[in-house]
Length: 209
Ligand code: ATP
Image (cartoon, rainbow, N blue to C red; front, side, top):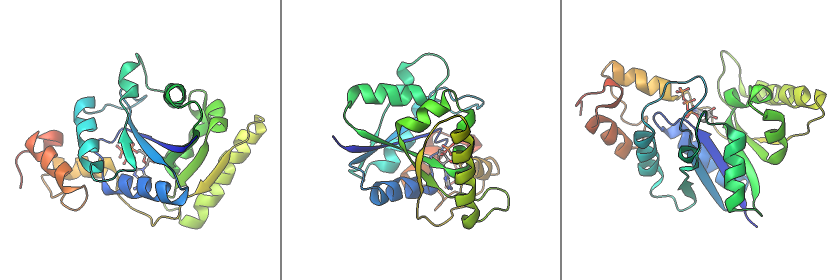
């Protein structure tokens, strides 16, 4: 029985913020491995082709033996829901102790996720502070406690901890915007990812060097 982390996201594209979060989770919770799960058909989001997003994650994590990518979401029809991902991964590793890695913005919406209450109880939550319009790190704790209380009202208990991580003001949308404006994304994403984006002309980047 191992301790396994699940890091779901659109990764459109993967950036250094994601990598720092994943490495911190591995270290802080002494995980045996962390599985990156690119979502195939996320609710409420238009995304770049799954194959491109997976290729970029693979390039980004290639040098870290603690990381793996799962294509589990591709094998399922319809919208990608987190609870199904956990169920599918548990089928392969029935004795694992599961951790879900998530940014504060996403964790805040957990009570509204499809079968979110059920999912909340099935794993331990590792939450990365993230700047949400004007909030600071101290408030991150408060926001997590509010989510906990919301779930308690539905008789749902949840185990969570904040990750010790510096705030990183990076997002995939910021990178897509930089590309659209033909601005540099060097040092915002791992170099092989930047080269992939340029070569495949993703996000309107063209052939900028
Ligand atoms: P977008 O800008 O397209 O919404 P994103 O940067 O939030 O994308 P996702 O792939 O949607 O990236 O995020 C996957 C997970 O990583 C989410 O739980 C999100 O909260 C978290 N995350 C992403 N970037 C950061 C960051 N800079 N700090 C903390 N958490 C982050």
